[in-house]
Image (cartoon, rainbow, N blue to C red; front, side, top):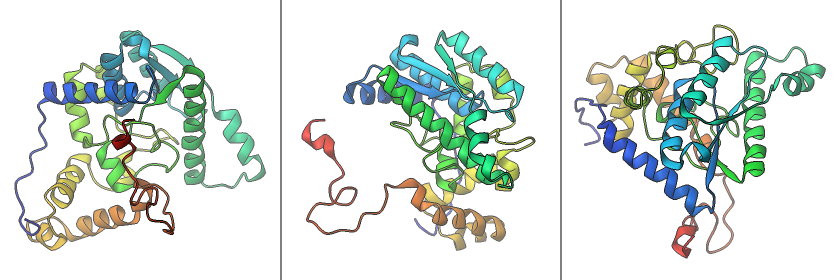
Length: 279
């Protein structure tokens, strides 16, 4: 199996996936003793899908949509986010993160755009967790499987959450389910971007279209094909090496902090399942 390349099929049965993911949100929210979630609504397809699923799982009253614009955000971001929230009848809150971010970089004005982007992502998540306390809610994740595997996100920023309903959906599958749930066309048509600086796009930074990335990731991860097998099957060696390199180098973003083992049962190593205790 590890050396065999099978044809990639990323088609979903959207009705079944919708049922599984809404059930996941409802059950995990209840399990945590909560009734609501907060979601950072960016105007992009990932957060839109997460919000749609949450609204179906918990009802409109169970979802608080938080808009977190920065001065560099595209004007369509807030417009599309508010339009979706209105369609779903969600309560919205807006917090401009520009003052916080710019105050921090006031003493270091030469900071590059990557540092600034990471700070923006972490500032947003800091606010989401504070609002989750206000509303006695969980923070809903919006990172998809493609982003998580490639490490295309900010640790403790947009990659953080209390539960993530879309983290096992590749980006192309997110689009399929979003279409099924009738996410507005303005969001579906939008070029994927983290909206951290002007003209920034996901595919421009990653170097490859999402359709190609998802198919290759499915081969390497889901089918467990070797790099050699993928290259032999016709995938460009440069792309295979870059993608596998990103997966390996970003592993630290996908796990709890490493803990040096001293005792018999160590958090995150031997002790991972508090659910076994009935929680």
